[in-house]
Structure formats: C-alpha cells, structure tokens
Length: 513
Image 1 (cartoon, helix red, strand yellow):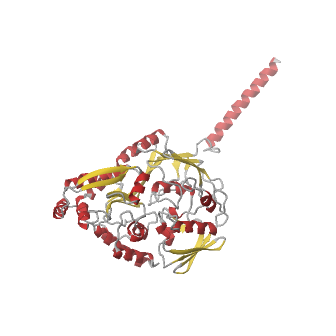
Image 2: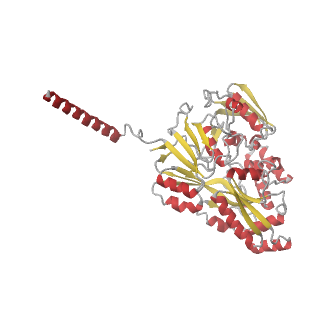
Image 3: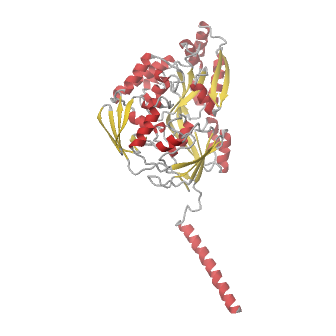
C-alpha cells in the first residue's frame, strides 16, 4: 500500500510540474497573450453628458458618447479628412439637387431593428421636424424631402444645390437612430444605434457605461467595457490617470500639460485642430449691440499674450474660420481689431462706456475659466467693471440658448470641417433663438453664407465664405480667443487610439495590452 501511495504521489507531482511548465510556455510564447489583460477602459470627463440622443443634443461631451453608440451615413477619414461612406455604400447625384444614396445591407440596431432606408428617412424627418426642434437642424435645413426608393436606397432632394451635404451627413448629430427605440422611449436616456458599443447605464453626475456590441457589422470591438466617468476637477482626473483608475482623458488644459507629460506611463497626442474658442456678445442687449463697444473690447484683449500661456495648445488667428476648416483664407488671419489698450480707452471715453458693468458668463471648465479671468483683468485695465459668473455645463448651454447673458465664452468644434457649417448655424439669422446664441442679424452676411451653401462649385463656395468671414470679423460679433490644438492623454497600454482634427475619437479600434 505504501509503495502505491508513493507512486501516486510522484505521479501527481510530475503532473503538476508538467502543467505548470505548459502554462509558462504558453504565456512566454504569447499563444494566450491578452487573456489576462482587462479590456476595460475608463475615460474621464469634467462635465456630464447633456443627453444621449443625436437628434436632441448639440454638445461635445454628449457627442463623445454618441460617437461610440451611433453611426452616420458618411464619415471623415481622421488622417486625410476626406469624406467616405460608412453606413452608406455609395451615392450619386443625377442632378444638382438630387442625392441617391445606396445603403449597406444586413446591419441591425442594438434593439434588433433593421437598418434600412425607412430608418434613415425616419431619423432625418425627426431631425428636420419643427416640433422636435433639433438643436442642429440647420445641418439639413436645405433638404426638401427624404424618400425611400427601395429597402436600401434613399433619395434626398434639396431645395437648391447644397455643397456641404456630405459634410453635414458625416456630423455626429446626423447619426441614424432606431425608429422603434425613438417611438417607444427616450433616446436621451436610452440610446439605440448601430455602433460598436451598446448603452448599459447612465447615472447622472457619475458615469455612463457602454459594453461591446458582439454583433457589430464590422466585427466586435476588442474593448469589453467603456466607462465615461464624470470627474469635475481636471487635476483629479490626472491623479486618477496616475494611479491607473483612468486610462484616457482629452481636451488637456494648458496648466495640466507639464504634469501629464511628466507621467512615465502616459502618451500625449497633440494635433492642430478645427475648433475655435471665442468671446461672444449678446446682440440683443445694450451696449453689446454697439459696434463701438465691441471694438473697444476687442482692442483691449491681448490675444497674443493669452495664446502664449497655452503652451502650444492653441494658435492665435483673428479669423473666425480656422486654418483647418474649408473656406479659410490667410488674409483673414489678422483682419480683426489688434491689441491696442489706448485705442480701447479712447473709444470707451468717446462713447461714455466708462465703468460699464459687465458680467462674463463662463462654463465651469478650466479652459473657459482661464479665458474669463484673463479677459476680466484686461477689460478692467481699460475702465470697464467686470464680474465673472460660472455655471455647470448643461445649465450654461440652456442659459446661453435662452439669451440670458451679456458676454460669454464658447467653442465650436467644426465637426464637419466646413466653413458653411460654422457660419450658418452660429451667425445666420435663420438660427436666432437656437444655435445663433449671439442673436447676430446681418442680411448681407446671410446672403453670402446662403450663396456658399447653394452651389456645388467649391471655388465659388470658398470665395463667398471668405467674404462672409471678413464681414463677421469686422462686426466683431465674435472675438476668436484661439484656434484649438486637439489633445488626448492615455496610458501606454492603450493602443489604437486616434484623435482627429475635430477633437473626435472612436474607441472601435482601441485595445489594451
């Protein structure tokens, strides 16, 4: 009995040693590499999403989530910025006002609803509905009708030739939604798209959780779970990245850049981008509707000194249309009112603006707060009495949309990278009361913007955009503080992340090693 016991003991011991050796060999050879690496990514944002419906929102924080859950008919290549089909298969234009779009087949929404021409028509009809009042309805304002030719063919008719249509259809807010989900629920709370990630939950003020779409039409993503975590203080988000609690942050504030770049396990990506950040005036209130007041403010702001403080995360350019946006012309780069505090004081004295009480409204983001503090100090130096009021992001968006402000700081990401889709929504009188938050109303400007939109001749479009841009610069309705350099910081274990010049990113090709 004892001999048998010894034999069994030796047999078991050999088996354990052999299994351990096999396990080590597999690991060393990489045949099972990645199986023990968690494919979970946490992204930190300083603001909560406003909502999760592409039809009903228009802010960059919400778009970051929408981009992962939904998809558009077309998309810009992040490297070349050229437009290519996504949910669309191809398109043709038999005449200047007709776009026939063939759709990809065999795609389903996360709720099992088929993606087809009916879904596209439903989405765009809702997007253009006056009753729904989509914040970015201006993207499809020139569209007369959307018709279903067959299950996978959509025909879009425009009132006039519409040059930026493909750019508009590549915008995140033009993402296609599940008709069933939209009719039966609230997409702002429960988004349903065709994208690589499926919505799990949104705990307001805390986080949004997404999981991989196992049935994604291009193949399931490698990330199993994505958490968008709300971390109100950016410095806290950096600390969380340092400890590994967060793997990805973007929109790096200047003052945090040196700290982030010093972290040994963190990569920083920087790229000249399409966003523009500006100081804007409420044109429905005095004295902000007075061109002399706006000139004085413009002359009082030292944008050169401000941009130097950004440590390479912004460029100075007095043009509203930035260098990475279609319609930009170098001649507009210094067409604004240059820094001249003595000139500012002179205009203030001549027009009786001394001691004018001003409230600068700023969202509670570090970048906007920095702008507000610098502008407050510089306007105080020329004799204006300036206070700063701060608000949480969602409340700020509602307040500015309602026109309850005097002067404020805003940004525009230029997601379509097309000047028409910058000037039309923000400064055309059609959009007063919605996306034209400043209430700018100039019929000559409107005419130029309209002309830039109703031709497919790209050279004519450039010329009209240049003229409209110069007119808005001279009217000083916006004072461009800087044009953005888009940024991202992520743990070195995160592979495949690419940020495009609009500041957008997709997590589809991302994995963790």
